[in-house]
Structures are given as structure tokens and as C-alpha cells.
Length: 270
Image (cartoon, rainbow, N blue to C red; front, top):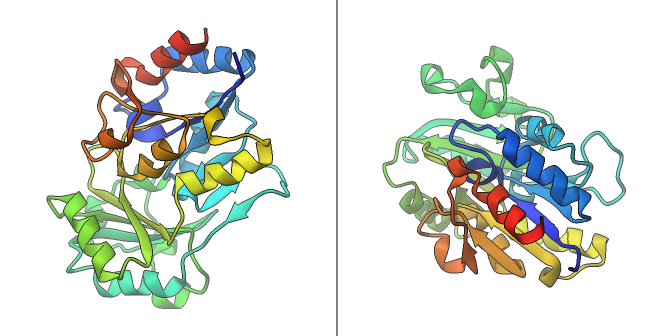
């Protein structure tokens, strides 16, 4: 069998509902790597919130963070590293509209730091930001917005996160990419126009001198649409959002709490 490049989303896909990797999933990924296939993480998470899983899987491949805004090899200087940033004015615009967006918090995400609104600090889960506690030094202020972020993260009270994402895209005249996160929380992530996991994977395929036909991708949410469309074979999780399913070639037989990705990879390659 021709060796494949396998792109894996994290939340709602490779991770279970407790945001953990099972021992079985870790084992299968190791065996797939030993068989000569290339395994990549493609996530909306910033690196600080994905690095634990990268190391648990013993990966040395590029990682895609912020839904494609950052492509890098962790802890290495890599000439192929790519960053695509959002004009900082959009972050200021988000802050100006936090009431109409029903925001619990708005955060500007950078490669190695973040700034976040703290009006509703009792409602913020620090783990969402990859920290134990939200501290005053991360409070977002206009004077701190001096550089362009990789992404803008927002937790909203809006009941329909998909409808809100549609409304916000219209509000910003489709100048941004606004998508929903997997999982139960109503999280929206915003990237620069044209940025997606698919654009980052296309960039990496050039690096690997491979084609989309060599790519298999797994995802569960709105932000995985382009990736599944782009891949030679795109898998939607059994627990996938209804918005994603029409773009998938196949669906896993098991959900993310049943090691759906690992079971599929084992059947395909081991």
C-alpha cells in the first residue's frame, strides 16, 4: 500500500469527551507510524493547548494550529514554518461588539501568549486557554493590542453558535474565516481570510511532494469542512456535526469516545 499522510483533528475527533487520548489510540498511532505513514495534527487549538497530545503521540511531524494560521514543527527551527495573521483592528472590532456577540470572553491568540477579556472571569474555564488560572497580566486592553494575532477566540452565550457565526461573517463582510469548535461549549474561532486546515495541508503537501490523493483526514466540526473536501479521503466522525457530514467521503463506525479514529486506522493499515 502507498504510504499515506493522515491529518487528525483533536477535539471531538482524536480526543474523547474528557479531552484525553486513550492508551489504545496512542498505541494505534504508534503502529501506523511504524508502518511508514505520516501522522499530522490539524487543530484549532493553539500550540500550548495541543503540545501535550503531540508529545504523547511521540510525533516529530509538522503541526497545524489555529485552524491553519500556524504551521510549524514544535521546538524546532524550520525553514518551512508559516504564519498567517489577522489584522489587529479586527480584534479591536470584536471588543467593540462583545455585547451584541453575547461574548462570555474574547481572546486574542498569539503563538506563545494570549490576552483575554475578564468581565466574566467566573465563567471562564482556564483550561480552555491552556492555563491553570486566568491572571491579570493576560487582561486584554487596547494598548496591549500592538501586534496581529494568529486567531481570535470567543465563547458566546448565543444558543445557536452556527447562526451566530453566519451573522458575524456577514457583519465582517466575509473578510474573515469564522468557525465553530467541536465539543459542547459554544466557542467560535476566527482566522484570516482564506486560512483553513486545508490551505495549511496544501502547503505541507508541497513540502512532502505529495498530492491530495495521498491525504486522509478525520474531523467532526464546521472548521473541518475544507480539510475533508481537500483530502483524497475525508472521514467525518460518527459524532460529527450535521454541517460537516455532507462534505465527508466516509463516516467512522465509532464516535470519539469509542476510539473511532484509532479503530478506523487499525482496520485500514494494521
